[in-house]
Length: 434
Ligand code: 4AD
Ligand code: MG
Image 1 (tube, rainbow, N blue to C red):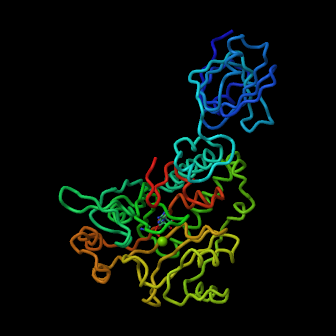
Image 2: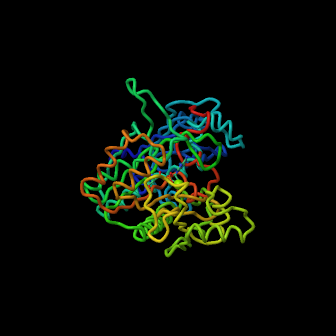
Image 3: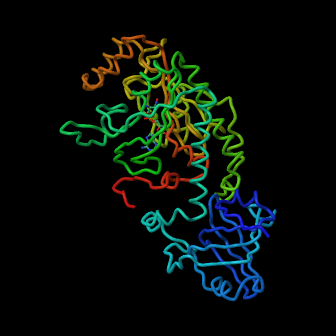
């Protein structure tokens, strides 16, 4: 017989049906009758069941199987069998078993724990099946994002994290000392994408962004990952089309490739299957009328909060694009609407089921003097924005882009009510451990 093959993931196991393999991993769970034992072993990409008959293994291996505890590290040898009833599609018939490290008193047991306790043990909580599933959905979404832009000839631009200026208002900046000067952790890579788009055409960035959000909500993190495309010569309607195409692509990808995870998360998939274009498009002014009709007292000029977003989104079975917001509460760089300069060509995509704003985007001001005027009106330090104005001095061009916080998107895909479970180590108000 040939030497056993070393494998490390469920996928590799499924390519080795009939073969002898060696697999190292962690014990998720165990059931034993004294004659036969069923071990749930966690390895790359999921768990696999290993079955050990008392007579199939040595006395020493059987003693270890009896003794092994939850979350111990183990190494097993066995034959891979096809098993249609198992989520992994395979099972291992054990021939050998070894404990590499015997874990005592793993703090997270199959019983219920409170969220505060789980958050304190986030580094261990990651091992739970729901947490693993959410993070695998996240990983798939990140890969799908890169594929979407790669397939459409975008160039990836890594924007800086340390910046001298604010992109999205000055109220939630993380400030740090930069050799005697002030620097801020980036709130958005957008300002750096705009000059890069003049160099490279369609571009996008995808990285961590930081906002010192002083309020404690289930939809805000201090550190989150944002993907931001920026497209030269794309105007507002084209931006809305791209937003719709992007979201529909990502939802389809999750449905296609994350079935095991969505099942663990008990996601109602019919809600996701309904996410197909065209998405409804309404203006801010229409949205205010709809809200008033629904009994919400908002007046024209007020920004939406979570409540308003939830009411609006609940009126549709797919995401809704809300556009043309009052300039007064939107970012300084948004292009005024041609028909009414009190409103800007900004668009928010609101997801259904209470998930609210997932994406914010706009056409950008490309006129130098108008942008200068807006920087002054917003009381922003002109010195810090000279380079940004250069884009409007040398080969100005109309352009648009958007930003999506991927934790909000992942929460929606997974049906999770709080963003903290969509990122491996959430950074929340007053909470930076572990
Ligand atoms: O609407 P925002 O502030 O837009 C921008 O930053 C633009 N510069 C993007 C662009 O046009 N290039 O943020 C974009 C998205 C939001 O729609 C939301 O999904 C997410 O970023 N987001 C947050 N996610 C988690 N926690 C927070 N504190 C977030 N703040 C924004
Ligand atoms: Mg926004």
